[in-house]
Length: 211
Image 1: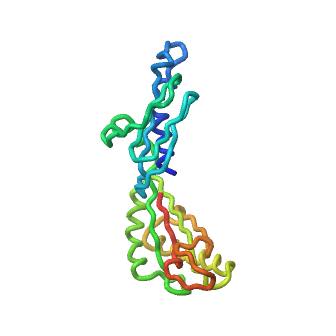
Image 2: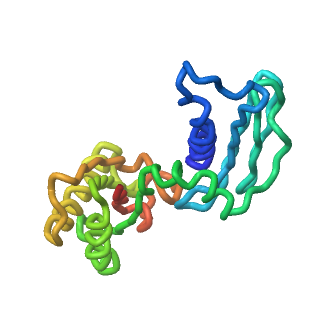
């Protein structure tokens, strides 16, 4: 999960002072070389995953938000402590600021057996454009989905038709066409699990990710 990945990046950032020491300069004794990891909630979902701090002397598991452990080469990682948000920013601020900006997700819905957006979804298009404009080098992924009415092949085609329809809508409101990638998952990635040949409005959708 992303939260575990952040913890690893943070740990690496804390170790840079040792890893980047020129070879001709005496480094600190191994016992004083310290690496600290902290587990952060996902920036989008706020869900906290799991991570482990491991060396040859042992392992400490991190499974709650802001759980932290410090290790040296000759000792097992310390028991879990909890860092404050202020301490995380103070210690790992530079590493966190270097992470890519989190993607923003939108879901647009369609009328039954159609590539026409519902009125509520059409109203989201200007907001998507505004989000694209906040990115320095934006990427827009548009993925079409369907419900289980019809054959899998027909739904794969319908998902692509819907994705291309949304691409056209986005271009019309001002998104650069070269930034948009379209795909179709057809009925293979249902938002609401249903039996075959089941109409479900929430599965008739296009998911947009703006990075």
